[in-house]
Image 1 (cartoon, one colour):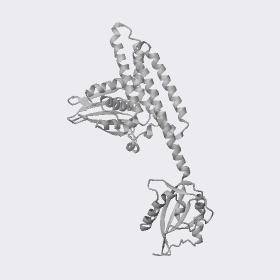
Image 2 (cartoon, one colour):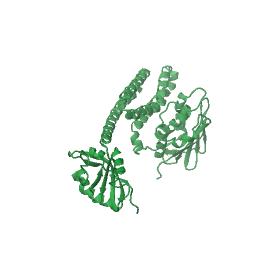
Image 3 (tube, helix red, strand yellow):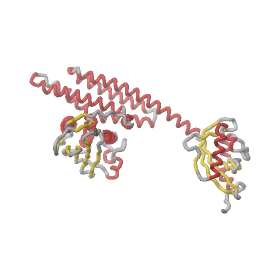
Image 4 (cartoon, one colour):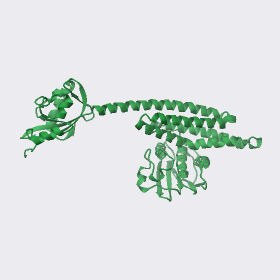
Length: 425
């Protein structure tokens, strides 16, 4: 094997070492320091060349020395470039006795037939301090999230109580909305203290408002219409709107609980409550609610085929899935009908939501179900980028599947398929 052109007494090699900002240490096979550049001496608190001839153990905390001897022996048995540590912290020992965290990379060379190891050493004290600060910020975020959850639960209970007071429902709902908007504004101002945490919390608030829009619109509309039905012959209509308010408040509470527990959803800890449902009636309920947010020129058409049967699934999760996909179809299309097509097959149910809207760019399709992702052609349209991610997770819980076909500027078709039963008995 030819000898290296870089060797300890070569002035060019020494000059290169001394110019490096990170510490460079050259050890012989006995673990003695042959070269230590000025950056190393400064890092460990030694005078220039004071480390030369010392054993590497002198700059390693005593509690790690025996373990380090074994690592050195193994390295010389099979020398190769590598990073030290492998998931554990490394520490150096200054001349003063102070310990500090390190990042170390190793390489090996042969000089005049002698084996040497070269260590590149970086003081990572600032990085460790930053990591500790980030961990503290995360703990503060968790504490804040718990406080926010408690506040939202309290406000939800107040909202439920307003349903029993129909005469004042409109006024109370308006006050609740203003209070929520004020709370959101206060939340966003508080989040300005931490740049990284600000982005996460802002996304949370936007996600919540996106999912609340439909039930809140239904509540406000029905509450306004109740005042018009004040005679005996309109009691049926009045009762209908009362029931819609109750249903929407219940749906709002369910959605709120789910989104405040988004971590539980990702960890698979959302409870599934299966029951036998009539899918067509569930879809018609969604259409009835979505009619309140249709844009001018839009309508929702419902088609069904096959022999109807009861589906055993979680009604709440299925309704959330259908609401999300239908509201997206409304949002991303103009002056065109939206079609919901239900198909009963032998062992499953298929539901298509078809729009003739902006479509999905081909380059964005592989990311469509990713959390917080939004396609490039809808950036100017309000949204959080969480809806389809949540839909996919819900369908996984229901043992279902989702896929789509799309042409840009011509529309999109989402297809969901659900098994006859969630659990086979």
